[in-house]
Length: 278
Image (cartoon, rainbow, N blue to C red; front, side, top):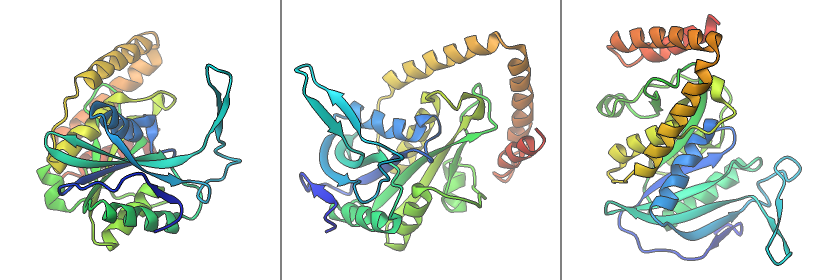
């Protein structure tokens, strides 16, 4: 086992599902990390392992944080990736959340793959979120890196993206080559809200993961967050006539794409076409 991995406990689990997210490039609106973090708190997940990022992080780019306790003692928080175990609706879960590593991605993926094998988590869903030309008022588009049958069965949009990728794209391919049943869910977050967290996108990821992964999770608290978020955004939009008009145009373009969507590609094409025309 890689020396960067510290096991606090190797649990005995029954066919666990692993859910993975990283903060950073893959995490627009903190939606991906927010989805796993909500799971962690809602299920009282238990910490079982820590991946030390000393070999994976550039500390001059992502610096450790200094905090001071009530007694005046100063402590340092180092970047890491953490593994938790939880249970939701009778399904065992392994939750993985951390900061996107900046170096040695192949070693990191090898380490994480080995750790998930150790936990006997043969099925993995990775979460990502990207900034898209989508309005906050409509249902969150969720793209899935799955075969055509699975996408159609779970109402997932296809991905034809080509270009730079993050740790989620690399890890997902690595896990598939290592024999895992691995897939990825990506939520689109409005580009004009890039500086705010997006609980609506996080909820969309969790809703799809529940149906794909066969677990149940009460999301009442998250629903409250979504309602409050929508109210705040609506109030901000109402004070900006230009943004309100821009949103109406996007809504019309995407609504037409949804109505005409016979092959699961029209909505993605309309998003891309709208972006090119701006």
